[in-house]
Image (tube, rainbow, N blue to C red):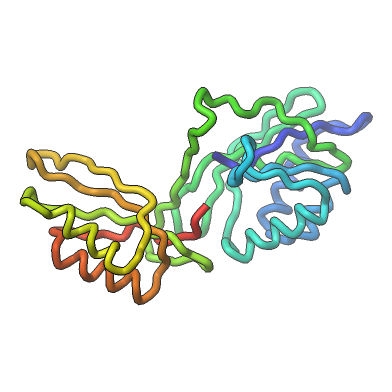
Amino acid sequence: MPDASTATAAPGDSATPELMKAISAAFNSRDVDRIVSFFTDDATFWLARGPEPVGRTLKGKETIRKALADRFKVIPDMRWDHKEYIFAGNRAVSVAAKVRSGTGVITLTTAPLMALGWRTDEILASGIEDDKKNFTRFFLVRRKRAVLSGANKTSIAFRLKNVPGALYKALSVFALRDISLSKIESRPMRGRPWEYVFYTDFLRGDDSVSRNALNHLGEVADLVKVLGIYPAA
């Protein structure tokens, strides 16, 4: 789910292409002071990732400033490649592809939506899913391996032969090291009946305990592939 908010121009103001381009340029400069100059002191900004139905609510210019500064420390090369601007009266939406250098597109996003003198405290629609416990995750696929600061969760895929005790032996490499699994699911292998690839998340980052577990898993599995190491939500 992308970062998003709705923006409404203050009375007497209007959304213009020039203003939206200026906001976009500010975000792509990653200059936090320049970005927050487009917020009112009591503005509200919604991050997609968080515990609330809308993700995470940030209230006030200084709170928004700190959150953006922290984000750029983790992803210093983030930018938004804008596709189009959509105007409706005194409101505007910027549709963009949020990208990191040297990678593919992360996801489409409707951000930024703030403008000088605007109030960003109205959500047009939220909680529209039919299952309140449904959560969607997005993954960044990149060419080179990278481990973000604070990473404490690992996603892997491994393949086993259809022999007695194969899964028990595979999972024991984590149990022996007190590594907690947060997910495991299987997918059948095409053209190889009764053989499966298992997709697993475990709560450990890139440390010696995790690496030893993966090396041990490699002794009992036909294939072990690390899909990502990242901070847990």
